[in-house]
Image (cartoon, rainbow, N blue to C red):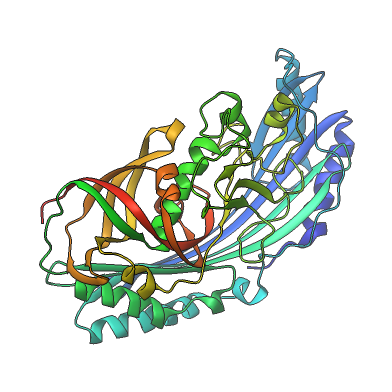
Length: 455
């Protein structure tokens, strides 16, 4: 992908805003080139590339707001977007909750962009997939999955002097390994640098799981010790994010943080921040409102510290925005914690498993939902690698289990933590969310299993 570069994106925005003669207006541009190669039965069957530009305009007349969107950076198109937004604003009622536009501020240099990844081509993606398929075929199994590379450019400009631009790259590779014996194994890697994806290691992890996943037995409902691998932990963190980490959720009393700031909500081994500026994260340094992103302490050693804010929720709370606005087409106002960093430890995978007397190993979850948002409770099923652990060893494969567990209770029972790894939850991996986690594997003292699928 050839980047448009800062001036190519920002100059048309400034010109259009000046020509509009509006007192309050902003423009946000998001350009994304997505290249995905899919494979199944150890063979590539699709390569697709999309290159889209989305432009979002807002005009404020008094405190009434009009919004329009388009996909062109041409001068006439931008003028029409702003004029259309102004026309809409003039027929709206005043909005007493309008927090005002962001003001000019310095923005840090982008940290999640890699030029070599932006140059990656379909042949490079195919080579990585070939490495996986060759190893899987040698093991007597078959492989399926995706290799995707996203390159994005974001630019925000407004009549208050905000002018921000940042590119970013995301490289992702996953493998689902399947055997004729009915077993499956899963592994993935995620980074803003494609060179950090390790196809051989991905194949090895997934093959090992698939080979172990045979002669499944059902697990009786009950409470068990458990080891959650990083992909599973990301799913738990997703539930915390969507139920309780926004300023709007706290204000409305829907959040587990509501009324308990400064009090313990989990055990002391759990610490969580939202930090888009962390060198291991995938993010740009400002939000769609043009506010610089900040590192926000959410839970420190089990103690509730507070939520993230966009400009809307910050005004309602008498606080300042932490730079956590998101695309309003995906989420409502209120702030979104999408770059979660959970403190980890030094325990190896063998040490985590070795600490279990009788319990389960969970690779990842599937279709997780929340029946009780106030407790950050999650329910769903496990997938692609659920095993029984007895006396510190994996002894047999289990049928996928259904669970109902509060994230607060799980994080209250942490015994051991492994090193962090960059991962996404199932929903975000499949394009239905936007949460990225630096998360460790963990061993907990109690996880509640409510049932098993047929073996």
